[in-house]
Length: 264
Image: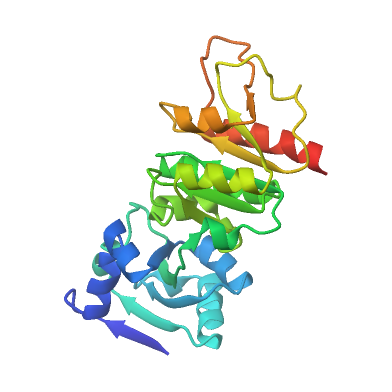
């Protein structure tokens, strides 16, 4: 049953609005999932959506009505509110008229890295679109875990979630700091491979071994000096034109698929 909420001051609306801020997401361990497609993927992956909000226009399409029935069958609380109220729950201009709220559990590195042989480490990646796209690409390339280092954009930022296109529901995402990650990866015998411009090693000419942690750095400053010093292998992608470098998400895609070829 859909519950109608009219007042902007309704507690459920106020609570959901608060989750647009990172400090509230971290405090409550909840984040917003926005959009018809990604919430359809949430249903298909049996992701645990706590409740959803729809605007007054959402049920105008048959496919939207079908999705609502899927949530009703799963006993998910459904709230409907005015377009004006709903627009304050999203950070997009052209909303699809539906959001969900989901719990998350912060995973630590020591307890959540076990038998993986292919992981990605994101060092202070700042752009939400890059972060989400890298997570999505890692999922597609068969990466078993994504380790996000302190100083990176909040992985539960709504723009990050949208950019993952549902991969946030299936990927193991771990938060860590650079000293911790270096120690544990060494203990577990990972070949730490860093994307780095100042090297003579081209990405398609090296031996990656059988257990790889690929490090992708900050868009402007690259990988930290500390992680460079802890890397076993530094690789670069050749630039045949006048561009100095590639976008972080594009670089990660090229490297991930090359490494995957060696691990198969």
